Length: 362
Image (cartoon, rainbow, N blue to C red; front, side, top):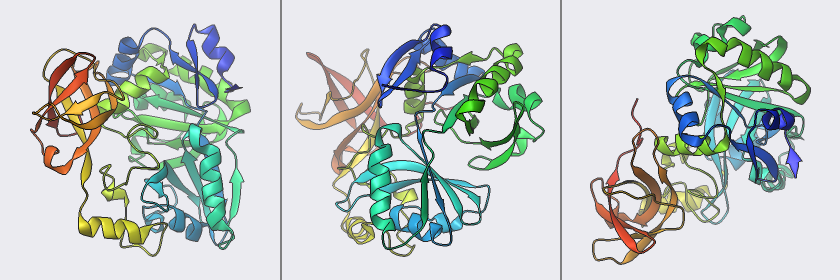
């Protein structure tokens, strides 16, 4: 099993470690509800160094990115980031990712840990005819997510950059925690604001220590992957392998907004355009339980006649709201806001209502 540069640090802090995407990762420290609350109300730090990072460089870099991603990376200025996905040839999704324009002709793609090899091979296949320079830096770089409403204030003392001036989905390369060149990105997977910090493996322990020193008066705490999942689910953010897969269309997943059919040719553009024209048959919906219960991935979704019409792709007990919430695909006729459904939880079918995202409103 692979480890991050901070593995020993997590163990010293008493983290419960689990295997995730081939890495030994901290799933929790003091418990998911307490950690969730820390991020919603204050500031917490996730080690997400298992994520993959690819540099795409040279005069053909943008051509390659435009070919393999669904969003329009041509609209990015230096210092901007963009959420996107890799469509596959058969209507599904290879992975979702963030594209950073670091310099002219230099882009950083940040992909999911479980898909690093798959994504690399997918991009490389299309690069044969395009000829951009591809560099996999996943093993050399660490990623910390400093998340929560107090993140800006807590971290301001360890950088010369005005953190409050970095707009959402923008980034700077600047000094941070005594390291000269660090990517400070106003992105995250929690919906509570904050930053993601990219630095070299040999620098991350210094960054971690200084982050905790700076955040001490703000109640900063380390946060595990379990709370990362409840935080992202309260926002309705898709998780690859659950809510989006090789079999789910970006249009069905509600990702039409990152599927720019107006840009020049990209992988399966024609298929997605045809699907948009014909209309989708199923849709990823958000639901809240009307009674006690916790929906889990794989549980059946029933209509009001108790017929199975779909499956829960993500589900949990929302720490912020104290009720069961989830996502799942259902036929279009059952997807309207306010539609009444049931979730089969063991022997009980529990009433649920289709609601608008995000579940959690600040």
